[in-house]
Length: 285
View 1 (tube, helix red, strand yellow):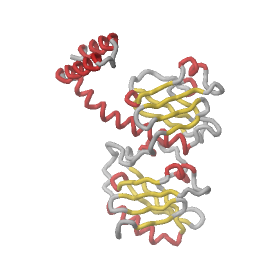
View 2 (cartoon, helix red, strand yellow):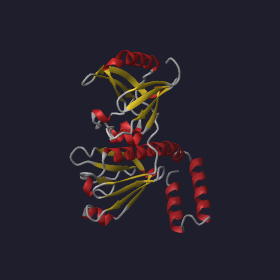
View 3 (cartoon, helix red, strand yellow):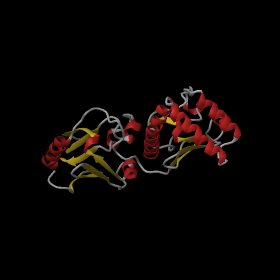
View 4 (cartoon, helix red, strand yellow):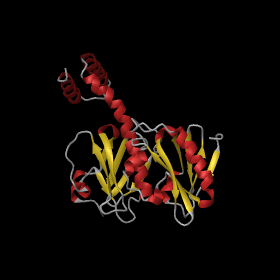
């Protein structure tokens, strides 16, 4: 790039080119997609990008389009290809007279890309929490780091969900999220658990899912929520991995039993919980 701070202003967004990243600032006007208004600003490291293209757009425009590497951006991972073109946060629509300038930035970005396949971890920050939104059958809340809650509405929740009661999901017990856009039939947000227990095929029967409806769970509310939860889950997953290796190590198991004993003595674990968990750990030896 010529220098840090170079700016390319387009329709609904502005790209600022830094030495190691592109900072995308989204317009917050009434004509901008609501998703852009929610995102406000995102910093995309060059290493998060797989490619950059420039192509003719509609009605006298050109489109500068960056494509993130698979696994680099929790928002795009949660969206799973369901975003409409106009809501793609990696598209910058420009008047056609800026095509030459756009070509310059495309080439400069391409020279800095080192695409090497899927990313091992998220490189783009997820929308920050805490967050919440109203679905058709309940309210979903996320504290931003450790816990997701579903609180059912008596006017929309199924009998299966009422019988199960309001739900609380520790992030450490989740393996991912499944987001079906509210702009298609049967949209929903489902939390996937590490237990691997079978979940009902229909989201309206699943206590681990909230379903969308007209005006309930819109993209600009439910997708950033899903992305934030997914990022927290992946972060917790990286913390879980060393524990899995520890379970195969007798010294690691002994250390966990010692720690469990400390929790028991401190009154944080009941006698029954202590006995059950200790037996569980001993069985791993």
